[in-house]
Image (cartoon, rainbow, N blue to C red; front, side, top):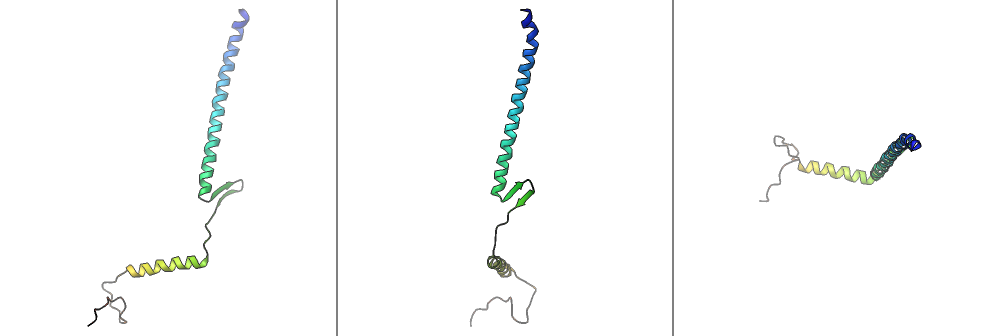
Length: 100
């Protein structure tokens, strides 16, 4: 009985240390899982983290597609504009007159 009472503080210490180690391990595993989920989510957005740093992927757009998109935006902008006080000498920006 005397030896058990001497070992009781050691057993309590081992249990407390074991619980602390288990909690620390769970926190470590959760943070790694969280980091992996974040990395996968960022990879879907073409952002990759490596030892060298962060790399951002850019979608490849050829010159013809870029020019087509830009031109269509300019055409839309021109179509939607109106200059109420502007009178062109060349007849631009006049509304079509009904035929006589």
